[in-house]
Length: 397
Length: 225
Ligand SMILES: Nc1ncnc2c1ncn2[C@@H]1O[C@H](COP(=O)(O)OP(=O)(O)OP(=O)(O)O)[C@@H](O)[C@H]1O
Ligand SMILES: [Mg+2]
Image (spheres, chains in turn orange, purple):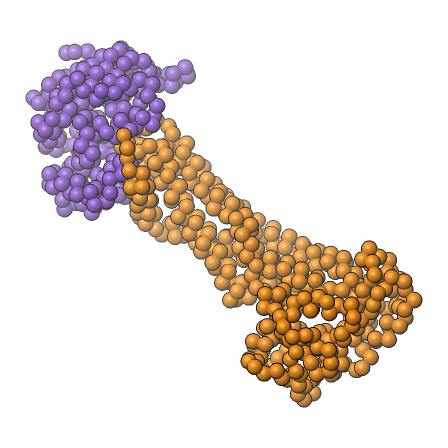
């Protein structure tokens, strides 16, 4: 005997939707609570992925060894002349001074990252050159290379020249010699690269000073030893190695996200308890409905299919709703709910604004931890009830 | 013979402490187009016997052939398929789903058969008209009167046009006027060729002139009066 498969499925879906509709207030409430949990989890995931991506791009730009001058526990400008005191240390390939800082543009209300450095053969310019879309890095005073976001927000179309304000509000004019790639790492998006002299001029920094000194070593395995020698040679400085910087990033990240995870786990646990409560006992009306359907010729599988559709519509709807809300929250509202929790990051990058990084694997993970248990909680108890013989419907009712 | 039972026993919870022998050595034959009444006190096994005739569960032992199919040892899946094609049930408390509309209640047996919505509606409306309750089509089943409920329950038993109609104490919750009306409908169904088995101890049913056969059931055994 053949029953048309597709029509059967449509009938069951139809039945599911109309029974969801009959209990619409309850179901909408469930979807909203469920969506809120998924929203929290998904925005957290998006934010932390965005942060991780940021950390990684920052690390790409990090030199092997970084020397900062410390005064009273705070970082201050470092004299370029310190480099001469390192000449005797074996294993150092090069020492290059760097200026970096943030430039707040009053006109566009945007924060730009400014890096001033001089072109040195074999220096850190190699990394920047790789992400250059066209043109060349600034080789002389008065030249600059911009990130795409700077180019866009300043409204530069075909102009090759643009200006920034010095602290005394006089204009400093620069010629654009190149742009960074659109698709390159996020860090270059708001970047302005200048010559050392121009950056000092822009920030009003006296000649002979830099923000930090970047040291490249001949053999990466010697980073640790070289750093120790530098620290001995330059008391009053902080010597950071790339592995250390990496560790710091991961530690801050790990602690912050660990704390947030605990909070989210609590929310998830509450949700599980809720759905378990739903799962542990079918209401008497539900049992009665299943018994009636079965005696009227519904197979156990038919009853379960309806329950499955029901769970899928509720949890799938909540999942889509929660993920979409999380995306909007992160993209359009700057993940305002989460940044306070992850505020440690603003120390590293005060201008932190995240482009959400969507990872399919994370979405799947989230799916497995939310939609799957909900489906199980709706289908399993019905399965236990529906696979019993339908005799109960016979007994008067 | 549409219904043939031979030496049927039914034991609930076999081998357990709460074992109940509900039917013992029941043999029964019902011809197509006839009306049979099973008469017995509460707990005598009427519902159990209707369950076996209605392909709800197989007998523990004995041979049962319903509409040409041997039931013994048939897995639940196939029992359900066979029940879907051959049996229309009318229950003591009607067993309607109170939040569903009358129309949706009546068409429940058609959903797993893959009958589309338009066809379902047409068939249901024909039956509603036949029983004079068209005006209740869109009412939730929880909001109609007892007499209407009873007719909705009959309509649901007929919607898939089964050859056998089973009714378990159908008049237990009806007053005598509705009970007579119910038996009149049974007469009409019998006249249209349906085979009907009723279980009851209500004299309005057991003394009904339209019955072809009446059997007493006591402690799970059948007796011909
Ligand atoms: N699912 C079941 N599990 C265990 N025992 C059962 C089950 N169903 C019925 N019984 C027992 O089997 C016997 C026959 O029950 P059945 O329901 O067939 O009687 P009945 O004549 O329909 O009674 P009533 O008039 O009360 O409906 C009773 O002793 C009853 O307790
Ligand atoms: Mg009974």
